[in-house]
Each structure stands twice: as structure tokens, then as C-alpha cells.
Length: 340
Image (cartoon, rainbow, N blue to C red; front, side, top):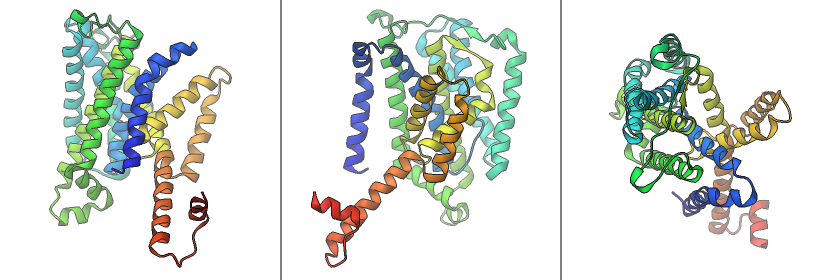
């Protein structure tokens, strides 16, 4: 990773870490919860991005594993009386296990067939969750009181700042895991399968196993997001398992930049902040969201982060080429850099 990229990530992490201390000082306490919600939903977008951006599989069923994470945590607390950490683990194990089973069938398919089967899985379990009210609460969902993070230290989710840092640290760990995976030999296998699965097979890569691993990892990330949202809202509902929730995550990932680490976070932040600001002024704000998505797809097909990264790399390449070949006229961008 380039030094500039590392510096940008460090600055972003520092900014996010300081928000619960800075925002209340300006009377913007409400936005602490909004940012926490953005971090949670960005994990769902990141799970979509892992499959679509890095492996080339477009899933409209990630809400299923998001919902399993929610319900695993909620059921663990409300029915089994588990503490926060065991309940969180139960939700993540449930979502990852579901992804392992569904992925064994889904990754055999590609293109629109893969997208269709992920929607089918999501719909099946959505209707199951709606019908089994004794377990899931159906339309009404499950409510519960959040147990303490660490009772001895007095860390409770009822405290806004403590809750924010809990969500922030868990999300940071998930993004760190994704960064390690993408930069590892497994990440190179993901890229090889995405670019050309036949050539990947010729060099010895097991395409089915590679896709299945990516699918399970994506289910794990979505499950963490679902478990966090359950703890954030003290609530779980079958409505979060419906495929339209996956559709929103796909939009966030595409707008932010599929195939980039921070693209899902940027896309989620942009559209959720837009919703919070505009929804109170215009009830048809979703039309504007659709327009923004269309404009990004047309003018920045790599997404906001992807297009910005490509622009920076192009400028660096032109500058390096000019330095190596002084006789070649500088481009306007390079000429301005030299003048400065």
C-alpha cells in the first residue's frame, strides 16, 4: 500500500475516533449515532464489495446473513440469557454457518444465475422468519435489553460514547481483516478468479473453493454488521432479511467504489448522510438518491474512491514519465505541479 494511502487511512481512523468527543461540543450529539449506524451498514456494503469487487460475483442476498447475525444475537440475549460477547459470537457463527451452506450451492453459478439464487435464498428465509413468530417475532420483531460490554468496568451500551467506541473498534477490526485478506495470496486468487476463471484454473487455482471462501467471509462480515445493528437498536426484525436491504448495500458499494477497501464506507456515508439531511425536507428524496447513483455509474464507473484512486495514479504516472523523459512536453497537470 502506498504511503499516501496509509496516511489517508490513519487520518480517517483518527477522525472517526475523535467524533464522539468533537460532535457534542458543537451540539451535534445526534450525529454520533448516525456515524455509528454508517459504520454498521458499511459492513453490509463491504460484504457485497468483497464478492462483487474482488471476486466478480454480484449478490443480492447479503441481507440474509445480516439478518442471521441480528437474530442470533437477539435470540441469544432474549431467550437464552447470554451475555453480550456470547450472544455476539452466536450471531456471527449463525450467519457464517448459513453462508457456508448457501455458498456451497450458490458459487457453482455465475453472472445473473448467481444473483438469482442469492435472492431466492434470501426470500426463503425471510418468509420462514415472518411465519415463525414464536421465535423471530415476525413483523413485530424481537426487543431486548442490551447486556453490559464489561460489567466490572461499568461499560454499558446505554452510554452513547461507549456504544460508539464499541461499534467503531469492531468495525475497524473487520476492515483490518479485509485489508489483510485482500493483500494476501488469497486476495490474489480472488483477483485471478474475477479476471478470468478459466485461466485461473489453468494455473492451478480451485475456482469453486476460492469463491466459496469469499462467500463465507462475506457472510461473516455481514453477520458482524447484523449483530452490531441488533445491539445498537436492541431489536431484530425479519424485514432486515428482505432482498431490498441487499439492494441498498449494492448501491452503496457501487457508488463508493467496488473493488476498493474504503469504497463501501464512503458510499454508505454519502447516501445515509444525504438521507438524513434531505428526507426531512423532501419526502421523495429516494428519487435524488437514484439520480446520484445513475450519475456516478455514468461519469465515475469505478465509484468515487475508485475514480479518485485512478486519477491520482494517472497523475503520478505522467509525472514519473516526464521526469524520466524530460524531452517530452509535460501535461497540463504536470506543468501546474512543476510551476508550484
